Image (cartoon, rainbow, N blue to C red):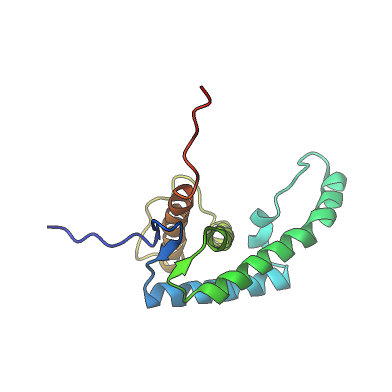
Length: 164
């Protein structure tokens, strides 16, 4: 009989999210989110470009205006999400609202790491002996966590109602 581990995030019957992360996973996330906070505050890393997408691809001047308008608000939101996540990293139960902030932070870290690694859609497999194997493993693990966050949050949606 194969061993099946518990999913990292599970919706319980009270509408709460049960967190099944190991101490190692929590410590890794603490490090990743601390690094992410520093990157956001420095705001000079090319890996951040996926967090602030281009709004006007054909008009650099309009895009610069858009970025000036929204960048500060997006940055504040990401920092606030990281603060909430860092404050709840040791919790065993989260609210859907807290898990949504986890989703924002995990996704942001994954986007930055994927940009740095120049990950493409065909990058499912990689060489475990390659110099970038460890960050690629982390990238894939963040994707795994993100998948389970979405699954847990989807379970919190009310059932569809039949309008007939």
